[in-house]
Image (cartoon, rainbow, N blue to C red; front, top):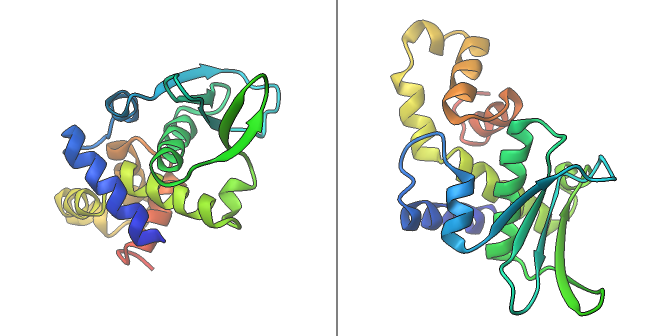
Amino acid sequence: MARRAEQAAARLLVEAGETAPPVSVERLAAHLGVVVSRSAFKDGDVSGMLIRQDGRAPVVGVNDVHSDHRQRFTIAHELGHFLLHPGREIVLDRPVRVNLRDKTSSMATDREEIEANAFAASLLMPADLVRSELQRLSAAVRQDPERCTDALAGIFDVSESAIGFRLIHLGLVS
């Protein structure tokens, strides 16, 4: 599951020519023909959603009340759903497929949510780029976990917790 997500993220990065951090999720969305729409959501727990409707461009809705880092991760997460999952059909005035990202999404209890989170992490923090940027840091910074995390978070334009989890997942820290 995580491998499939990482491979899909790597393919998208190559197709779109994203080769250096920070990855532009807006550019990747445009490359896929996905519209990104930011607005305040009534339910503050919802970070984003992907709406697919026949005959219309898919839309990633992003809660713009959330931090910039969370918004970037949410867009990447929803692009993962777009590429990997069909979504659940709901009927408004016509059938629409929706994927929602809310507080339960980050708890990683649903297979599709786990996979979309793995896709987002792989897209925003590609393993090869994380390794190369880590090596580019001075030895003093690499030896100080807090400074290292802060530096990498800045390079990849992600939260400290996101890069921390990624470093652990890649086996670069314990």
